[in-house]
Image (spheres, rainbow, N blue to C red):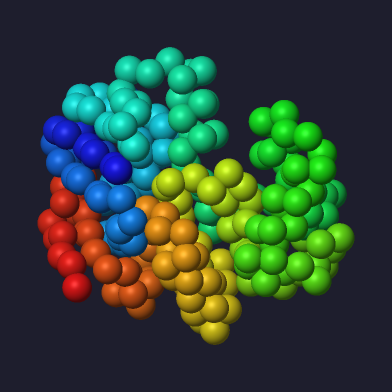
Length: 224
């Protein structure tokens, strides 16, 4: 489902910074994987490469059979639209749109008819237990509810891959546990491949597979 072969990423400035150094990684369909490591270890760089937001300096990246390395902007946009859902630490909801409108937005961009969009958005908000908050604005929601809206939006086309960047990092511990439980429930229901970048040891250990990075290299990869 996710494959990296010999992937390196270098950033050039006054001195060259090696963010990733010859990384090989294979994540199978339906796995729920955590990615941990200290600041500067390469976690965000790796997530950006898998999400098609950046290109490697060397090596190849492919997801669900689509090669990202060397793809042009239009191809990358199409792959992200069809195959990847992104969940962010700070929700990234549009403040002037309701829950229903925020979840509907990606579907409008795909040109779906209005009735189909509403049905799908309602289905997703029901899935994350927010069907009673359809017309609420983000500022009228708790942090946990905002993240549930963001998760529903990420699932808009039921993508085969979900990439979550510190999804509990901006929440209190109890709300974070609720969001993690929701992500685990969705994983079981949808069999989506999920990769979670986290500093939270509890979040990392809740995943079936745990990967750790240090200095741009994988230093731990264990299951169970």
